[in-house]
Amino acid sequence: MKAIKNYINGQWVDSKSTQILDVMNPATTEVIARVPLSTPDEVRTAIEAAKDAFWEWRETPPLSRVRYMFRLKDLMEEHFEELSRVIVQEEGKCIDEARGEVRRAIEQVEVATGIPSLMMGYNLEDIAMGIDEYCVRQPLGVFCAIAPFNFPLMVSLWFLPYAVACGNTYIVKPSEQVPLSQNRLFELMDEAGFPEGVVNLVNGAKEVVDTLLESPDVEGVSFVGSTRVGRYIYQKAAENGKRAQCQTGAKNFLVVMPDANLDRTVASLLTSFFGCAGERCLSGAVLLAVGDIYEPLKERFVDAASRLKVGYGLDETVQMGPVISKSHMERVLGHIEKGLEEGAKLVLDGRTTEVEEYPNGFFIGPTIFDQVRPQMTIANEEIFGPVACIIKTRDLDEAIDIIHANPYGNAASIYTSSGKWAREFNYRVQCGNIGINIGIVAPMAFFPFSGCKDSFFGDLHGQGRDAIDFFTENKIVISRWF
Ligand code: NAD
Image (cartoon, protein in one colour):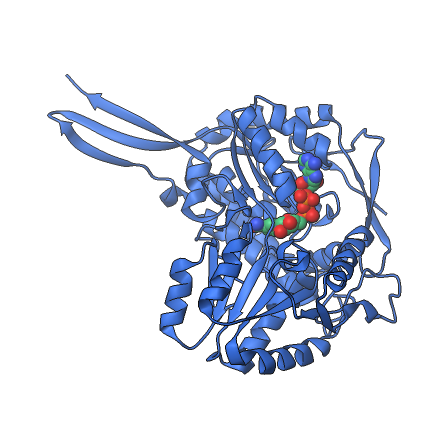
């Protein structure tokens, strides 16, 4: 049984905490590791190490700093399959989905190798005669990431490579439900030879987060997780004078217009709603079928979903894995009950799905509700499981009104052959990520990961140029030489 350690100041250290949690494989329910909830003193040691490492690291030329990223990228490629398997074992997604996660994680490291160009400032000579002005971007100090369970490897890498390549030092707090992928990533960072204190890993939960947020030596926080916790973190970071970017919950609406290509649309809907067992902040949640497409769309969507193979993600033929935990499974099942109570009709009931080899696994099969009304709880709250709600709408206007009535603003998609409808959707819909005939709108590493309303708290997003702005301070120099 692996006992998870912290990585502080270039050393693997055992936590002295008496609070230790089991890490469970959600498909097999086997306990695969034990993770400590580290103490405030241990967090402070990590902050101290990161603070001490900062000056030497910021003086290291950017080109030298990114050489560590090149090494990390090579190591991640070398261990690609192993990293993918660790993700499946602790999180439950299918092996191909895990490979996708590792690929996306590597892409972040690749893009951060461009920091020497990306963090360049700008200048103007002769703002008055003989006076020049220029703007440089400087790193600030210690930053941290607080990550959710659903992308155990990738999420910290939405932030760390940019922060560190810009010259900051870093602390990651992974989700206590899935500490193994970050543990392996930090072993690779250790092998890549990052100087002591530049990258640190502290396991734990709320107490670790609060200690990070209360420390005057932490400059900023990147959070990814639920809206409830994200709102709390944003407020607490502001109270303590820190930069904060909090990517939070979602309820994503997918609109299908009468002229959509049905074959292609249904294939895309399947991965959107049921990929990663619906545990993606970009997963489809509500299907808005416009006009006459409603009946044929429903029939084909239900038929295709009913044929998805559910099971343990290490089996290459499995198409959908379990949800993360027993308590989360009960929460999703509670939402299904609530949908029935409120009068929606189940046209595909995933509660009956059984996986013979793993009878205790946290499996829920693809579930589809029809006759959903926009006011119902299942049409409004984030379920974060393999549950789709179908609502029939009269036209695109009604569909957009339903989307806008929802508090979240992470992603929305339209399926159509009409440029006019697509343009109208993309122009009007208040969501950070818009898909046109695309069901998972995951921005590449060189674009910001957008999101608005209750799906994001902050102003500068993760990834892309926003990341450079978040992790640096502009300094203006005005000079005149006599
Ligand atoms: P969560 O909010 O429960 O946990 C996220 C992190 O916060 C974990 O590291 C956890 O230890 C910590 N945490 C939990 N409670 C805390 C508290 N009271 N105080 C301080 N820290 C606390 O989220 P989760 O269940 O791990 O992840 C699922 C959520 O993440 C979903 O809502 C999903 O939409 C969201 N998510 C959003 C994005 C995005 O980019 N918008 C991406 C992935 C996941």
